[in-house]
Amino acid sequence: MHDTLSIAIPRYSGRGFWPSVLRIGLAAAAHQGFSANLFTTASAMFPREAVASVVGMGGMAGGIGGMLMAEVVGSVLQATGSYLIPFLISGSSYGVAVLAMQLPAPRRDRIQDLQK
Image (cartoon, rainbow, N blue to C red; front, top):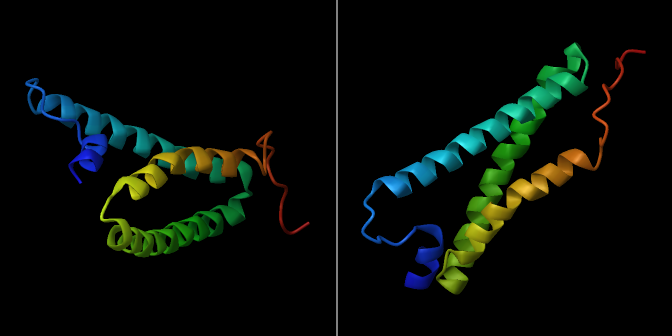
């Protein structure tokens, strides 16, 4: 278990507490920037009438994904006793999200009005 924790939490090497705080803060800022881009993408690609629905569906999908991920983490932790797999899934989820956004709409063209 100690080896798995060393991947997620940097070992204390005499440099103090602040390098770890700064790394976590940088990761949180990057996550916030990514989520802000998700909301901007929805408003840039969909007509004004559909933006709230698209963002709402995205929020619902995120909530359901969070519930499912909690179940996966619990099952993996009971089976392996390690957080390694959940951390690998978490780390790769940003790349998967970028691909999921890029593949369906590579040019980011605006979707035309839904009423026409």
